[in-house]
Amino acid sequence: MDIKQLRFFEELCREKSFSRASKKLHISQPALSKAIHLLEEDIGLQLLDRSTRHLFVTKEGAVIRRHAQKILRGAEDLREEVEDIKLHKKGSFTFGLPPVIGSSFFPNIIADFHTNYPEAEMNIIEEGSKIMEQSLLERKIDVGIAILPVNQLQFEAVPIINRRILAVASKHHPLASREKLTMNDIKQERFLMFQQGFSLYDRVREACIQSGYEPDVLHESTQWDFLYECAMAGLGIAFLPETVVHKAKTEDIAILNIDDPLLYWRLALIWRKESYQTQAAQAWIQFVRERFLN
Image 1 (cartoon, rainbow, N blue to C red):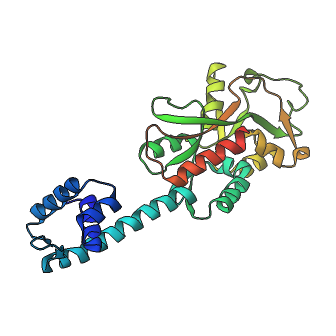
Image 2: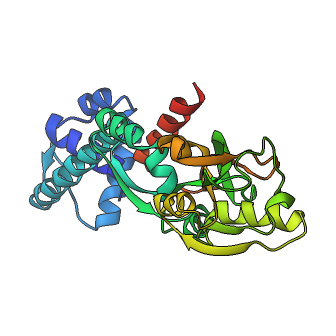
Image 3: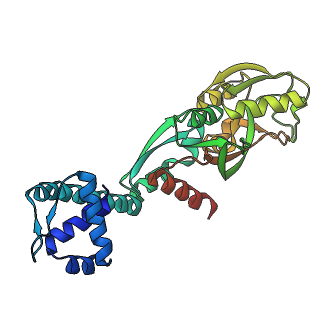
C-alpha cells in the first residue's frame, strides 16, 4: 500500500468511473485498474463492486476510504509544511560563538538575521574556538566560528575576518616607546593570555616557541576586559584581538608594535563536512557569508 494507490482509490470513489478517474489522474484505465487490484490484494479486502454497470464502493471500501482520506490530508499537510519550511527557512540550529568574537562582530548580524528570518530558531553556545571544532564533531553544535586553519578533511570553512592580535601594556611600560618589537624582545615579560582552549592562546604561545622560549603566563582568562585592565595596571603584557583593543580606551594603554606572522587571526564560519543542515542553518550560513564577503 502506498500514497499513490490511496490517491487513485479516492479519485475512483469520487468519480465512480474508471474512465473519468483515469482522465483526472492522467493515467490509462488499465494502469488504474491494476493499481486498485494490487491495493485490494495488499489489504485483503474488496473495495469496489464491479458486478454492475455502475461502480460501487463496498462497506469495507467505505471504511478504508475514511482512513485513506486522513492519510492523504496528512500527506498534503506535510507537503505544504515542507514548502513553508523551505520558503520561510523554518527550523532550529545551534551556533557556536567564542565570547570575544561574539561581542565584536555578531550582535547586529544576529539581530538582522532574526528580523529577516523570524521563524528560524538559533541557539547560541559560547566557548573557545578550539573547543568549537570538537563540539562540531560531537554534534553539540551545527555551525561555529573558528580561527583558521582547521582540518579541511573534517570541516567546510568560509573565511570571514582577518585581524591582528595586538600586544598591550601599561603606558608606563619600558617598551612602550619602542617603535617596533619582536617576540624575542618580550621574552622576559609576564604574559596575560586568554585561557587554554582559545585559539588566541595557541597562536601567541606558538609565536613564543618559534622565538625559542615558553611564555611566562601570569594570568589566563576568558574575559578580555579583565586582561586589558591587568595590562593597564602594569601586571604584564596582554594579547588581545585588534577589534577588542580598538573598542577600549586606547589612551590608557600602550599598543606594542610586535612584528610576527603568527600574531594574526583569520576567522571562519565552519561546519562538519557533508553534514545535514536545517533550512534555518543554511539560511544563517548564507546570511553570514553575504554580510562579510559582499
